[in-house]
Length: 228
Ligand SMILES: C[S@@+](CC[C@H](N)C(=O)[O-])C[C@H]1O[C@@H](n2cnc3c(N)ncnc32)[C@H](O)[C@@H]1O
Image 1 (tube, protein in one colour):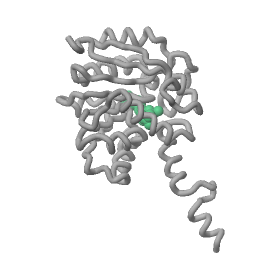
Image 2 (image 1 turned 30 degrees about the vertical axis):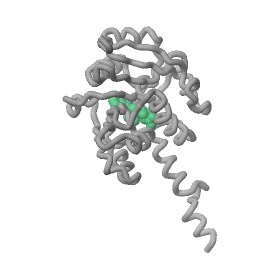
Image 3 (image 1 turned 60 degrees about the vertical axis):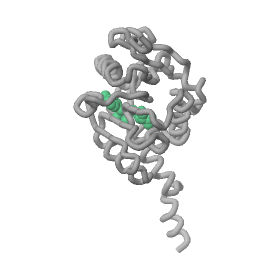
Image 4 (image 1 turned 45 degrees about the vertical axis):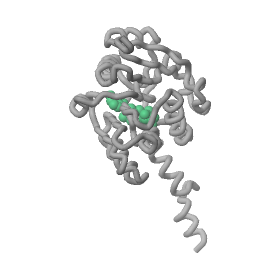
């Protein structure tokens, strides 16, 4: 009787229901064991960079809202847009909005293979957040992504994206995991009317030391017309 109850609560893996749910979601976005740290990092980084409740945020490659749930909770109604190329994770993201009682914040979530060209025509953003995504893009897609960022930023808006400059290459799910020199991103930025600054590695901003991603560099992109 007791062992039946234990199995019901904890499951055969020894994880409780909440841990199983976290592991299920985390399997959609990356290596295990850093879900909460990665979630906390995203909102902490952006608020340290000045994100205010009434700013508009575009989360490119939002996945099932690991970063998105706290951001939606923090931002005013209607200020968050999340896009992802995988329709199944956008479906999960919508479920997460409901599960976390965030429907009232009216986030907009779109599956798109064009970085939102078909959905985001007039929208312009104070912040574009592109976390753990750019290294999964082929060179052609990275170019397209930077072009879209240039279009979608408000004149004084800012984009933060992390890239892999010195780690190993590999694959993750159906995506490549690419290493490119900083000059590659500088060239893409110039080509697309953006300026780029390197801010340091994720570990310098307190990202977890449990995964190699800590050595990714964070880039800051702005319109090259900003402030003119
Ligand atoms: C490592 S996950 C990170 C997810 C999320 N940013 C987070 O931190 O939890 C990378 C995400 O980028 C998405 N992605 C990959 N290529 C994309 C593309 N061309 N356009 C939009 N999203 C893309 C993947 O589907 C995946 O959800």
